[in-house]
Length: 99
Image 1 (tube, rainbow, N blue to C red):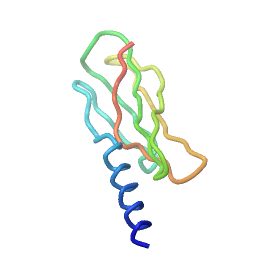
Image 2 (image 1 turned 60 degrees about the vertical axis):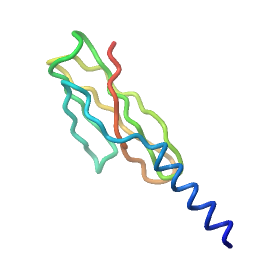
Image 3 (image 1 turned 90 degrees about the vertical axis):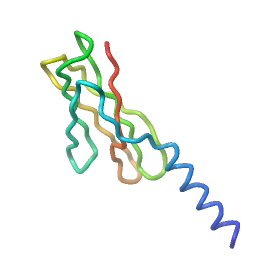
């Protein structure tokens, strides 16, 4: 029984360590939608041109990245959505890929 409890504690700690912290990209602003399953990112400054939001997703069973739509600086937003067949997916941070 103690081994089971220890294994569960290690699994929870590993998930917490592997999950990235929510950080805001410099010059960009975010808005979380749909109960935290989607992130919409607007960039007013930064590199000229286009960018893509990459959501860091989790559902309690695993972590993965979800690539969003192409956005433009001082123009269109980039929207990334977490989807999963199991568990309740949510955005656990994001980063911006400059294109």
